[in-house]
Amino acid sequence: MEAFADYAVNFGRDQIEAMLKRRGFKPEYSFGAFDGDRIVAFILNGIGFHDGHLTAYDTGTAAVKSYRGKGLVKQIFDKTQQYLVERGIENYLLEVLSDNTAAIKLYSRLGFETVREFTCHVQACSAISRNSKMCRIDHVELEQLDGNIQIYKDLPPDFTPSWQNSQESISRAGDAISVVAAKHNGELCGFIAYDPQQGDLTQIVVSQDCRGEGIGSLLFDYFLAHNKADIVKALNVDVNCESLRYFLESKNLNISSRQFEMIKKL
Image 1 (cartoon, one colour):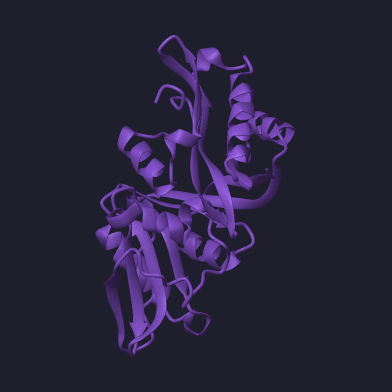
Image 2 (cartoon, helix red, strand yellow):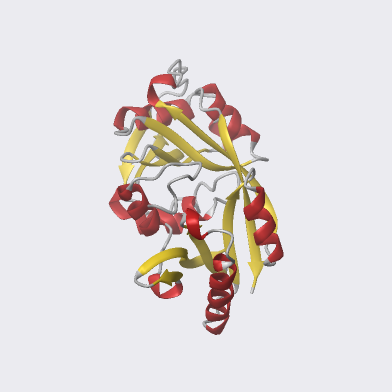
């Protein structure tokens, strides 16, 4: 908590615990620097698959402010990388805010390459635009699904989701993520996955032949009605996915920050 105190995004304890679970945090693959019994810097790693490769994901790297600039993160990273390689991890993946130039320079020196840019959209619920158009397709029904149901094969998103929004992460979150399908005459035509406690819009997908008919707005309105947080977040939208970005901006979910996805082959 102390290490993240001056971070651009504020985290509470419950948010950090939920984040670690969803991102596959493995303490046995994570390392810290200690001053006596006090942890002063750390790298927290999740383990899973990304693009078919066994991957370590940097769930969080930070140092207490008074211990920064001492090379601790570099030392921890060297130890971590050796450990991951010995255990057959193929890639090391992370995300970094695009305006965090110091971190980007550090990761570049450590051998990470930028592979994608993401936009992040955050807005107070009170500022969300609710002028949704009516669904123009008759007999569309919404159905709550089991969070572990494999729906990406039937209706894949427009871009490969980031680590925290992947199907694997949704499954790890269990009941914390709600998945709701839109069906037309019994056929899947869209779905939304969201965390009602955190206000996190994890995935929203509408089939290509049903777009522009109000199904996305119908799903989004359902999410708003069941959202228990005072904000709405849609994190890590691929910058090249204009359809989703325009949809979010139509709801006044404008871009609040940008991130780079970086990867290193081990």
